[in-house]
Amino acid sequence: MNDELQRLITMYDRGHLSRRQLLQGLLGVGLGTSMVSSRSDALAAGGQRKPLFRAHTINHVTIHTADVSRSKAFYQSLTAGYDHFCLGVDDFDAPRALAVLKSAMPEAQSSLEFGDQVYLRDPDGVRVQLADVKYKRG
Image 1 (tube, rainbow, N blue to C red):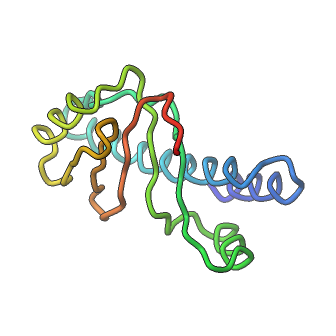
Image 2: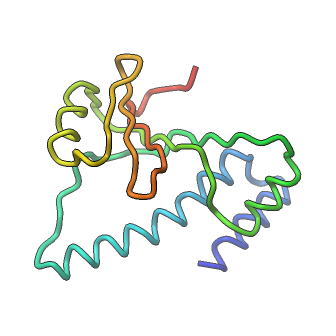
């Protein structure tokens, strides 16, 4: 994983990645690790869990910062501390997704916002947004 992080940072420093692309890559590295762990746990429990949704993209990650250079240094050393991230889901129906989440994951505190987006909390309290794959933050 450290090699992948270094590769992303080098590409960013050389101007081959935008800040958004860097953050998506960092998040992907972090999600990849947790997905492997979750899949292993599911298989160890005697079966493979079917995902509730098929996300097509990581739509965006929002980071609030008062000091860009400090944040850059931080993200060069660690991938964490983001406000939320959005998964773009194919054929997304927000009210239906909310109902599925409230039934399957009541502890996630799911809510419908703006009529077309669903927000929930992961086990660590990180806010996760689900939206249509075509959603563009306005």
